[in-house]
Length: 314
Length: 105
Image (cartoon, rainbow over all chains, first blue to last red):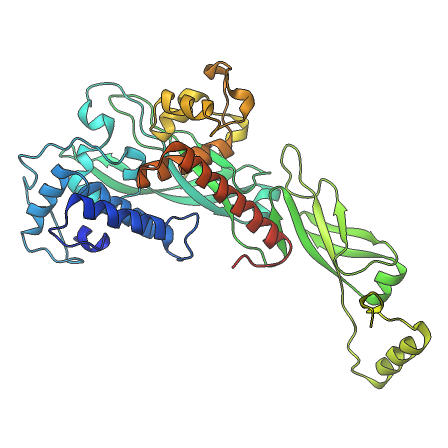
């Protein structure tokens, strides 16, 4: 386990005042806010910042952590807390909660893990486990067909000394068909463990989709580009196209232009009220690569007398 | 062999007020106040019995956003609600951009 330098994470000196720590935390919380940050690792950064702030904003935890730091541990160096390192300190658990703490590092769990959450102080009471919240990335196809996805979770559990440690376990999750972005799925009993025989909490996962090379998703509607030849656009045609749930044959109306949308009702995400699938037409010109092709274009130019810039007044 | 478990859509088992509050580590009163101030659910909920309120995925994500903004910035609830509105608006515009084949970045 690595020793973590919380002062470095919050970009403050060791003698920073509570006010300086708060200011720096807010500046970083703004910079790495997962909803707006352009940084690629915003989410993991935010977890580190929250963890550092949970310790440094709490007088008791900060004092205990500082005392530990005097042992000469370097950031990144292998670390085991000395026995009884926290004697004389009482942790009240302010400033963060159990759901957040589930995101925190092994380092944090080892130091403060046995002292977090309502269960720590009332372990003799029956108390339901904490709910945990996270995100899951799915593929569009998962939504059309349903899927079973492997998920590795870090679950706090009590070790022999009664301390909370983080243990990894893998489970296979059956994702229901019709799930769409922004929805939340619930995994019963996969949150924090219950206390004194009470039920475990649940795990809630906010659904996001990986970008797809052919389909684009907006809520329950799915968009795809349908390339067509100029004569198919002009004369109309029946064309075949693969869609997420198979292959369909669609009628391109005559006199279609690029950008026209064909709606396949109910062929979007198969939710309770299914979304629609939109095929956006894109007229693709055959290249004038051969003499014959050039002749065709020249004949069109002469015969059709077509000026696409007519409305521009030139 | 890993354990298999069914994921249930929140839409198929909506949150009650108590479930939402417990899951997000806030009090019932915290949620009730924000519904009455028009920051959660729709205006139709104001003045109705809180024990019949139901919260879907969107409310759940929104509550978590508001908690994070209020907590991290000691923001007042209305300001947190406004920020959440803006984030939701940006999300939906980004989704539309992407659906039109344009990248948001």
